[in-house]
Image 1 (tube, rainbow, N blue to C red):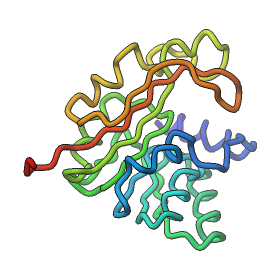
Image 2 (cartoon, rainbow, N blue to C red; image 1 turned 45 degrees about the horizontal axis):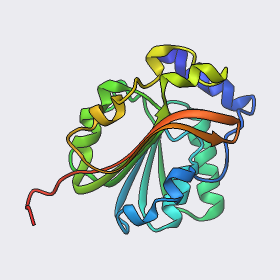
Image 3 (cartoon, rainbow, N blue to C red; image 1 turned 60 degrees about the vertical axis):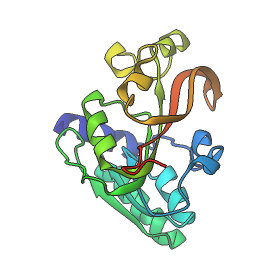
Length: 195
């Protein structure tokens, strides 16, 4: 993973352009999110979603492999006066705490083995927002080229079958670089007490 960290650090050093605005799938679905609490941004990059959630009053932890990206997030958080705990960590080895978060967001990072840990890290009633590329993205000539880094049809729903599905969409949407093939899920961990 050191090679991956170096590669991402170099991309961010060379000015990898990441949008500053939060992901549309997040901002368009605020009504499905908890009204505050602790949030985790997985593979946050420079922190666009972490900073947005902090601006809404969430106590946010953001994790990324790239020390350069994390430092950029810390600088933005300080400049904006937003409390974001930004951590450099390799998610292949980092242990997520159990039942810690009211909200977890994961945008364009696919580590299938992490799915059970994500569910375990949600508090009962906690919400997951997940969006990533599907295998159909290969037709557009940009984005991940390795099929293992792309979701298969229906796979995202299967990965989080234990969550109550609040919203699910799979298909082609318009992105800032043109059409993109994605799967999107908002799911809620069932409470221990049934209503």
